[in-house]
Amino acid sequence: MIRRAALVTGSTSGIGLGIAKALAGAGYDIMLNGFGSATQVSAAVSDLAAAGVRVEYNDADMSKPSEIRALVQATKDAFGRLDVLVNNAGIQHVARTEAFPEDKWDAILAINLSAVFHATKAALPHMQKEGWGRVINVASVHGRVASEGKCAYVAAKHGVIGLTKAVALENANAGITANAICPGWVETPLALQQVAARAAASGLSEAEEAELLVGEKQPMKRFTSPSSIGALAVFLCSDAADTITGSEQVIDGGWLAQ
Image (cartoon, rainbow, N blue to C red; front, side, top):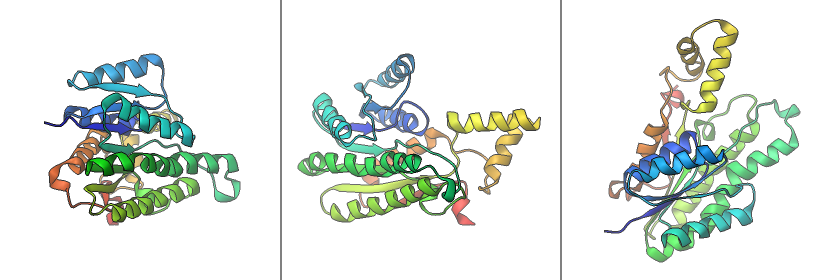
């Protein structure tokens, strides 16, 4: 049986780590990537390796095309193959458009959109040679709709969905699929910090503030778990998803149903 290998960018915490754990549990060798302390990275590697798969870590800076290309090659060198690419790395900044710092715009576009292109471009030849591959791009509901103060993030995520569709069309008969996952509110460390700050300011409990925060956008007033997004990614890698390509897989508590 073939042991497949996956590269998950931005996978030392949050959504990326949830996806990496799910893929490791499904038997994929994993290349982790992202920032974090040596202790945090070591814990993530050990956790995933407990599933009986090979796990490597690479600290490539996703704003630098040369490091992205080296990361893809390092994955191929480590495991002898690269079957699944999950483009998850991302950053955020909130400000009105007229006040949005230009350096923040450039950084968000570089990491949230251009990095997806550079990693995909580098990975596709390996997948095309094998006649099988999965490109999974973690977009957002903000790839479909906008929110105030997030012009760069919204622009980047809309671009990710467009890029996903182009890659899907170009590889429709090459055994390779490309799909975007579009989460709403996700239970990440960053989101939980936001909830804690709101609770400290309001005097409400964190559970109450979490419901209020999520409910501002979602009819379903609870976070999606990273593990649920991981399970969706595993499904997209399965044989059952062979003809799902160019799609936007929404997992958003009803946000876009409104």
